[in-house]
Image 1 (cartoon, rainbow, N blue to C red):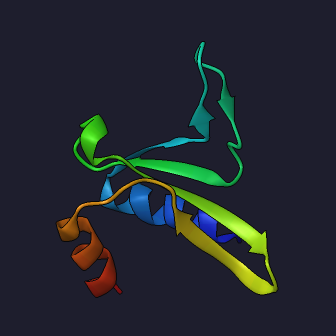
Image 2 (cartoon, helix red, strand yellow):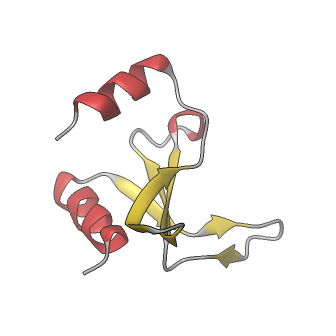
Image 3 (cartoon, rainbow, N blue to C red):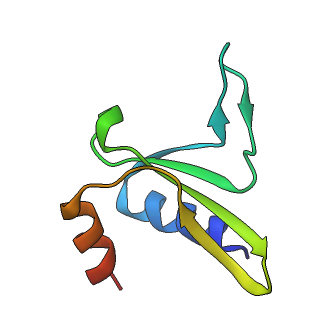
Length: 80
């Protein structure tokens, strides 16, 4: 199971909406296998995008690819 699979399973268990991949102009999605956009309250301003990457001499990891608020940074730091 990949980190992306684990993230999506956890989101489903918590009832949090997410979409797979980046949505390009025209509505086409790309990178659906390793990109997850989380919609905690269905507000695009609160959406956070995670991309799983493997490489750079490290184990696979999730990266945040959106600007986040101070509150989101603290919540991510405290989450276990």
